[in-house]
Length: 390
Ligand SMILES: [Zn+2]
Image (cartoon, rainbow, N blue to C red; front, side):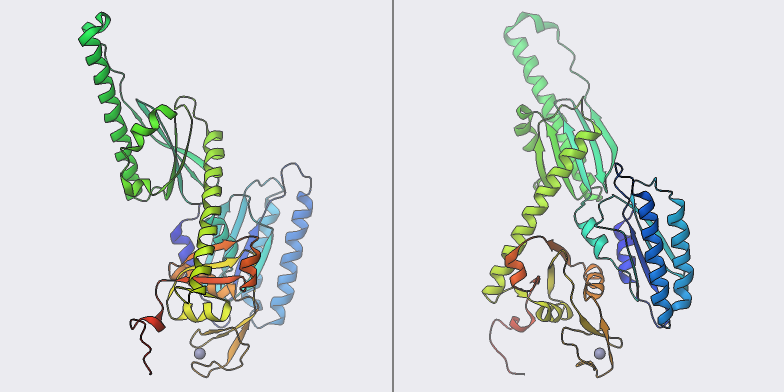
């Protein structure tokens, strides 16, 4: 399973001179479909095409070994793979990393470049926070971890059922007392569950969580959640602890993650457009986004899911420019053309902890250039809004 550290390590990779960074994404054929053979042929075609292209450039030697290894690997899958796969390789830097992924990639693809191609992985990981689904009732709790399509039961909490007191059968004071003590015990149990969630969040066992419980218990339990923990709650559904199933974890978890992501995207997009209109903490269009990235101002980078644009990069100082200039306006050295500017800005965003938000089917967003950024601050407005001539 891929971790955040793996992801960051891949983003930090930068090949030099003769290095070839190979990124291979494999999306298996749907199980109902008999096109596994076609998948194998597709992989072969992609690899052969990459070999032909690599031979045209100076970097062919190192790519050949990795490409052959990918071909062998994919050949061994024999069409019975259910999970998707990502492979990142650079033989001259001794890197070979394989990751199993949920079968949710757009397609099988192969990239040979100076950097790893991380956009597909960023889209996939961005849509899959580490999620806990907790089932709670008055004396039990079960916790499931749902990440990258895999479900694992983590922990469970059980409070022994209260022993009945001697006076139970007589009604009146004793029965009332017994009832109260049952309530106290339930409350104590809810507190323990809330505390377990707080500690789990503290050790980053999850990013977001979902609660499955009966409606009657929700109010009492919710009151025990620490506000910081509650801010990570995506939603609640009605469920019984005893009959909790992996299927239920998957269905309810996926649904709530999908809904909350869609809402988050809409809110971020609205915010960036409002901020850009008021000349505040928002910029739109590639040219201004690149400038803000370079100034370290960006907090959230928004781009259309299929966004791609030509740009140039200075091999010497790393400056990115939306104008196809031959010489770097910063240091004067020669620039290199980037077929897709995302190859440079996605790793840069990951390295700098910039949140990436992919926007889908929003005509208003496409009108402003399909790329925008929310800023932490604006360097040109840091002096209290007073224009200072430099
Ligand atoms: Zn430069």
